[in-house]
Length: 376
Image 1 (cartoon, rainbow, N blue to C red):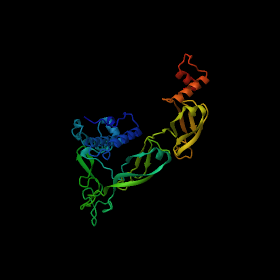
Image 2: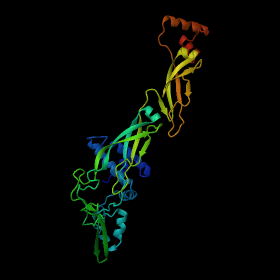
Image 3: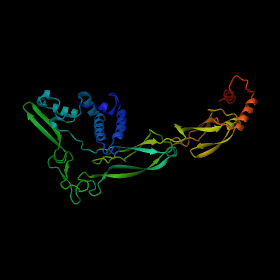
Image 4: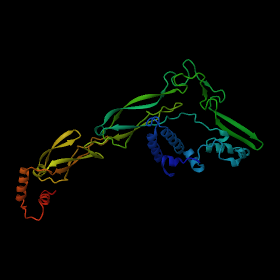
């Protein structure tokens, strides 16, 4: 049964290219072998995700898959046409179908011979609340392929060189033409001797094994701008896998994850917190200390501040990205009601209640009257 690539990536068949790309990035990040060392199931899942993306991100392969349920024919799936023999008498049809289906006639497949961009890489960067608010310089450690220093990327052992493939004469492709009384059939296949490279390495480099690249750890210093938040992605152009055949390197995408703060909650560029205040301070007013991202700041509460009052400190929030403007800090006043009173405190509160005109003959309990008096 053919694989359902849409189901593998978790997208609808009408998903846009951007939706497909986002779904792939999310799943690739989750199942990447570097994040799941030794997990064979995750490794197979990653391969399956990559296979689905390679098809659905390519317009030609996607159209082919949507129509026939597969993007890899290799001469199979059309037995009703007698192994394509039925097309031999129609001259140019072989070329036409080869253009549509990637030249699968004759069991071959055309391989790109021009410059190819390197693969993109992804990395989750964890930041503290303060680092996200004010920016920071972070070192990102990734593993990627680098040009082999021993062979300078040629893949050949030092002192030797590559030679042009004598079978395809450097084209990387083999053209096969079959003539019949009714016409001819032409197929273009990847050269099986040089595997489409157009050159042969007789003496491979001992370090890279002829690949011209080696996997290395790379540390990249990144300046994180002030104001970033979880869910944002910072692209680093050219910091992905190197390209091939002169193509540009891929990109590195940093996915930002901000750790929660023990006091503040964030909404956009504004931050929120709750500050406990004594019942006397809320009633009489006075100076309190308000925590901010730069440290504590003095603030004078007005007399009779009610529980749940929200006060704004302008410009004490998080800077907006690429701007000198900052958000605000909002703190909610939480009046603390004492749970235990000594005799002296109880006596004073009773006298206070009497001053408010509250007596024992009142139908309301003392607690109810106290709440009414202070708006609790």
